[in-house]
Every structure is written in C-alpha cells, then in structure tokens.
Image 1 (tube, rainbow, N blue to C red):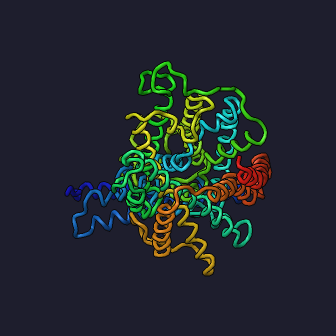
Image 2 (cartoon, helix red, strand yellow; image 1 turned 120 degrees about the vertical axis):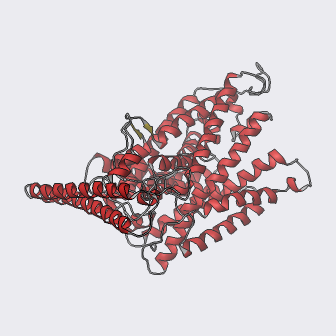
Image 3 (cartoon, helix red, strand yellow; image 1 turned 90 degrees about the vertical axis):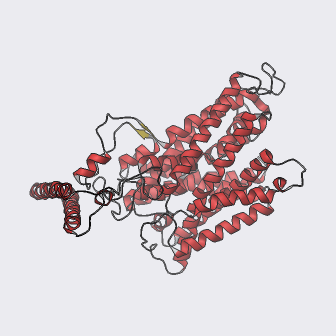
Length: 549
C-alpha cells in the first residue's frame, strides 16, 4: 500500500491552512462590505464565505490530526473519498454539497456527479416506451406525430424544471415527493406518494413481464416443455439479476447499469435507422432488399380527433421521469439552478470548482481543460425518440407493430436487439422500485406520526430497516405478479395513464406554483397552465383508455 511521507503530509497541511487563512480574511472583508448591502444579499454572501472558511479549517484540522498521529496514513485516506464512476463502493461525485448561495445541500452526504445523474435520468425517461413510438406515429401521421413528440418533450422538460426549482427552493436534502407534497397542505404527500406507487409499481411489473417475454422468445421454443421453455424460469432469472441492484442504497449507485441501458437503446435506435436504408437482406424490413410487401401506407397526416389525442397521451407517458428527479437532485454534487438546467437540457460550461475542497484535491479532481459541451437528459432522449419514431414508421408505415422489434424478421440482429431490450428493462426495474420503496416508506412514516428518514452512514446497500423491509416485500410482490400474469391489461393502462399524467404535469406545476408564490411572473403562470393541462388530461386519458383508444 502506498503511504504518504511526513514531508508530503506537512506540505498538504500548510497548503490547507494557508487557504483557510485566506478564506477567513476574505470572509472578514466581505463582512465589512456586506453591511452596506441589502439584508438579503448580505446574509447570503456572508454565510457562503463563512461556511467556506469553516470547511477549510476543518480540512486543515483533519490533516493536522493525521500528520501528528503515530500511524502512517495511506495517501488515499488523506485525499478523502475519491470519486469513481465505475467503482460502486465510491460516490461518482467528489463529495461537495456546496453550490450557489441559497442552494446548499447536506455536506455529510456523498454526492453524485452530473454524468451519473444524467444517465440515471435518461434511463428513467426511456425504458421500453421508445419501442412503441413508431406505432403512435402510424396512428397520428408523420407530421402530427413529430409535432406531438416535440411538444411533449418541451412540456416534459418544463415539468422537470418546475419540480427541480421547487425542490431547490425547499432545500436539496429532500429525497422524495413527501416534503414537496406537504407544502401544499399537511398529509397531501400521501396522495402524491400513491400516484408514484401506482405508476412505478405498474412499470416495474411490466418490465419483468417484458424481460420474461424477450428471454423466452430468444432461448425458449414455442410450445416446448423443457426447463428453458418455462416462463417461471426466465421471470426468476430477471428478478435474480434485478434484486441486488434494487437493494443499492442510492440512485447514484445505479449509474453503471443506467449507462449500459442508454448505450443499448442507442444501439437499438441505430438498428432501426439501418433497417430503413436496407444495406443487406438481414437489415431489410421485409427480409429482402427491395421487397415492400410488409410495408403499409405512410400518410403525412393520419387519424384525427380522439385517436390523435390518445397518441398524445402515449407520447406524454414517454417523458414520465419526474418521480426520479428528487432523489437524483438530492444526490447531485453542487446542486444549483445552473446544474439543474445542465442536467435537463445540457450545458457548455465546464464544472465549477467546489469551494470546499483543499488545493491538493482540486488539482487532482479538476485538471485544466477547455470548456466542453455536456448534453442533458433531454438532449440524449429527444434525438433518439425522433430517430426511432421516424425510421420505424417509414420502414413499415401503417403496418408497424406496437413494439417495433416485433415488425422485423427473426435474424441475429433483431435477436440481439431483443436481448438488449431484456437487459434494459432488467436494469431499469431498480429505478422504478427505488421510487416505489421511497414512497411506501414515506407513507408508513407519515401514518406513524411523520418525521424525516433517519440519518444512516454511507453504505453501498440499503441500511434503513424500514426501506429494506419495504424493498424485500416489493421484490416478492412483483415476482409473484409477474409469475401469474402475462398481460396486466386494463388495470395498468388505467393506473399508468392517470398516475403518469399526475406525475408528469399536475404535481410539478402545482409544486412550483405553491413554492414560488412570492415570485409572480411568466414562469409561475406557465406552471399553473401545466397544472391545469394535467387536470384536464387525467379524466380525458382515463375515458379514452376505457373506450379502447
């Protein structure tokens, strides 16, 4: 094991102490200038500088303690917990919870990097809904379909913005919808959590069914009686893979599997586009280059009225990910309005240097580099949605299947696509159950008298007893349902459409409207419009579902 020499340790101490003294002097000067400013600006600036100075002094004290210890300390210990994207025993962020004035998280918690938060958000958005988009395009028509897709993307992004700003207004340590719901009125959080449970639990069970169907179609034989032809086997395999991932404590710990899922969906989108151009018989819609026997009509304008509006609901559900934003944002390193925008839409700015880090850590964590563009969650999702929708629809026209992969002839490429989709839904299952277990646990705490979740030490797996018991029950329940049900049918359609509409439109608009009551303006008016639209959409989508649209 590498160890640090006394000279290196003392040099690090002097650097930290010098920086702490400079920060303290700066805080004193800032305090004198702050007296001439407004009370609000003065308090904010003074707080930030004092906290920064205190943090530097704490770093210096820790280093001094380590240097005077009789034990030779490993260099890694002096450098604190280093960030790693692939090592799940470490956070992906560098541990700073400091951001802009007024947007400070809990410095005792390990934090997630922007890249980790981005892939988790993108994975939550996409799931398997991307495979149903060409069928929606076939009903609405090419032009209305693309217009609806862009409109729902804009509305979904604004809903994320509203929800994130409401959370930042209250404090980023809020890890679920609970406190946001209680800002509306006491115990309203129970209604919010029930909507999250309805939507996410149905999605989690649906993911297990989709994974089972895909694995069975790849490895099983229709009508066979051997072990590999059993649905129970592949359901058990799916749950067996998803269970350890579901027991991870934080959303940040799911970053590697989320990155894998996003990469697979990019490959599936590339497959859909390649088939449209027909480079070979294997990559041809009908199995032979030039054969158009399987291709239907391709009208620019399809159905109108209720059928098109019904597809609006399908596209809107494709952007339902708001239930994952509170835990993602609460874990995000340096949670600020700017980084929220970068998470949703992307940013060309380089990451800011966290002010709480000693110089030696700043040099290690932030090497000099040119500013680079960072795509946001929607910057990844929307191009993929458009590509799959357009090329899938143009390949098969009105004959496209509800799952685009089912339209293709069986060959190694489509088989690989189905296997990839199975992996995607298995790795997406923990994201849905993460929100579900949080909601169940919060409801139980509310019914037992309220209170925040207990503080628990850093850990890879869940170490809150209530959450752990809840997650084990959810695993058993979803496994049992997936074993006996092959199609959730109308119940999931009802709970999914109503729950998704509430999560995507109603609650984000409501939370922003309530938390920003002292800031009237265009954004608050737009949030109210989003809330109103969601309230209209819920009964409408429910009626369309019951009518069979």
